[in-house]
Image 1 (cartoon, rainbow, N blue to C red):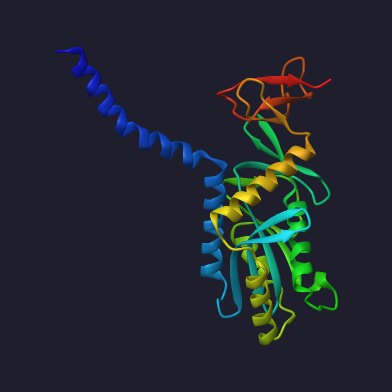
Image 2 (image 1 turned 180 degrees about the vertical axis):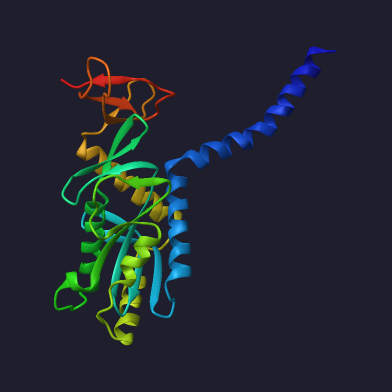
Amino acid sequence: MDLSIYLNMIFSAAWYLIPIFIFAVIIKSAWFKGVLGEWQVNLLIKFFLDKDNYHLIKNVTLPTDDGTTQIDHIIVSKYGIFVVETKNMKGWIFGSANQKQWTQKIFKHSSKFQNPLHQNYKHVRTLEDLLLTGCKAKKDCIFSVIIFIGDSTFKTKMPDNVRFARGGIEYIKSKRDIAFSEDKVADIIEQIESGRLESSFTTNRQHVKHVKEIVKEKSDAKFCSRCNSDMVLRKATKGKNAGNEFWGCSAFPKCRNVVEIG
């Protein structure tokens, strides 16, 4: 058979594999995991919170003095305003309210991520500035809620407002003191809708750019010299360096680059 025929057959087969490859890359991306987690929380809210009493506003981007902040879910009710941050993660989760970073451990590999309570604090403060709700004390009517989704397990005692899946809904439903009249609820919803930035590709791109700038400024951030992926802080569990921390490539095991500390 002519070589050109073989080549044509190979290229024809490759075209079928390209969409499969692209799909595999997408579903493994952090973006997709975030979207999937938010979708799951949307379902929890839809099925387990009475829509007549709890009003959901999704993916709210608000302007700040230094750029923008993006809130996964805002739930407005007569019992208060709930600012929800979603985390779609797997493995063991270690953390406390005051720690700057929490730890995710998957088998023998550990990585750090920003304390979601600290992350959501800025969301709450930005929303407070927008609404100026007039509560006797703002903390009495605006609540920060962290909901973890995925195959994860808390290995340390978490604050009461950090819950897994359905537990986050139960925390919201536990607030029963009346904070707002029906008219005030409608007014708050209108203020949020009018104060948010338009939901668009441009808004999202600008927010992503702002987040990247913040990460760069914090620059404990390190990048792999081999593949340019993020380097994450890990701790050796065996060998002569057991107990010592080191920087490891986040693309592990595809990239095994490490940088010793000190």
